[in-house]
Every structure is written in structure tokens, then in C-alpha cells.
Image (cartoon, rainbow, N blue to C red; front, side, top):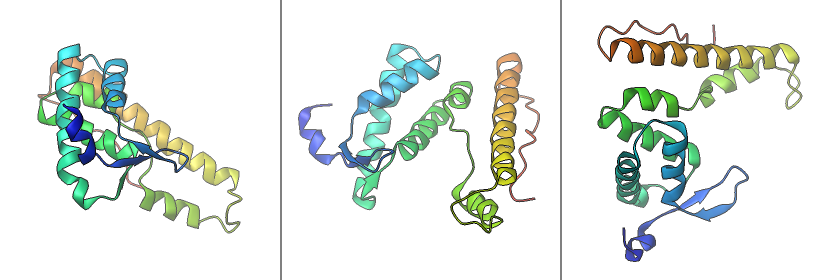
Length: 155
């Protein structure tokens, strides 16, 4: 990608809310660190994610690292890297579900321990389900995968 394309790239809001320039190197580094992709494969996925970000940047004011991770996972799936997508996936709770769990707390920002435990249990269960699915793919390929037992929140 030449420097002329840098004008097309959006800003990224980091975890502290600071506006930063987009850097494709973060995608490449994460792919190499977190997956088994070769250098060439990681470069190709990084290039395609960057193109995707440029193509939708007119519709999005700011990007966030989790959003970029979602785009990256989309490209991993598109290219058949399902096991690597599982290794690269983000574990957590959708905002809507978390808001419902937090609404159970009457203390506002002072979250009771039983609510924190419920959140932690859900995240640990999701991590276990992703690990099990990854192990099944490694053992059997993508055929004959058992349905993961991920349960939606709230219950």
C-alpha cells in the first residue's frame, strides 16, 4: 500500500478514547502472534482488512480495535482459516447482554460481587467453548463439528 492511501484511512479510538492514526502493522503483528498464519498469509489478510476498512470508512467516523478485530476475523473466515479465527477471536459479552446483567445491580457503578462472578463465569464458559471447537477443528477439520454449548445471556 502506498502512502497516498494513508489519507483514506480513518482514525482509530484506542482503549483510552485517544484518536490515533490507523496502523496496519497492528493487524499483522496480532495475526503472527495469535495465529499459525505464515508471514505471506498474514500480509495478505492485513492487506485485505486494510482495503475493507478503506471501503467502509465513509460510513464510520471512528474505528476501534475490537471492530478491526471483527473485520480481521471476517477475512480469516472468508479465506478458510477457521481454526486461526478461533485463536484470534475476542472473548467477552455483547454490550446488550452486559447491560441486562448490570441492570440487575441497584448500586449503579458499584457492581456487587455476584454480578461480577456471573460475568466472569460467562466469559470463562465462552472461552472453554471456543477452545473445544478449536480442538474439534484441529482433530476433524471443519466437517462433523459438534454444536458448541454457548448459552445466551441472560438466563
